[in-house]
Image 1 (tube, rainbow, N blue to C red):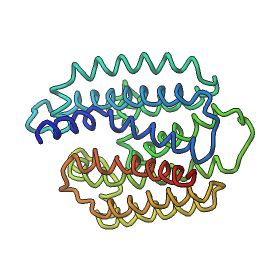
Image 2 (cartoon, rainbow, N blue to C red; image 1 turned 90 degrees about the horizontal axis):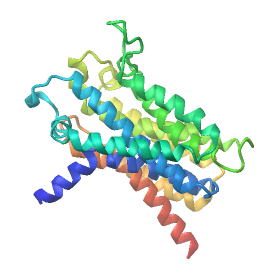
Image 3 (cartoon, helix red, strand yellow; image 1 turned 90 degrees about the vertical axis):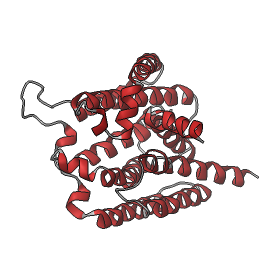
Length: 292
């Protein structure tokens, strides 16, 4: 059992799992919107590598700015402090692979990659580095969750769209899909702000759970998931895909209703983030059943 827990921590705390989730979400978009698969492997590999690299660099910066007394660190940062050398090596390797993949995607992909990189960088680095009172993007009151939602939707919708042979043909489903992913991402990110509510208060970071309270934040998350379902309903996707996505959303609503700030870190890092995998599997199952 200890070995299994150690494996789960390796996958989740190292950001391998969240990188897999971004890839799964992107592949879901390829499936439901029937995007050409000619460079699918390259796009997904690039997304995985850059996601892993970005998340770990952000963790390193956060770790560096946090109290060095390991007893006061959260479980994830404690784990990172012990595995920093391994994560550094893996991050460099995946970063190089990601750069290599970027040479094989449509050049317009950089219209997504560059803004994503800038936003990710200033998410943890002060916007005005030489001004001591300058804020990072995550420190702007109530702003960080929208940055996360925007970056994720930009990657998950933007890259497949820019790498399809139909581009630059405009399809009304693209902005609808962008908004749908944005809403779903925020909905499953709000529980993380509930988890961090005491930490954010101590560091004077203003977040939605502090403004609305835990119960109302969960209600907001459920409302966003319902809004996401409505957008999927009006989108031009196949019925079996819609029912698969609907099932995934309902499961997400049930899981999020159990959110408490006292939950273990693995509840958020594995189960809440794993809702994306659940959504992906629901679409794959619906695809398989329809093909029978």
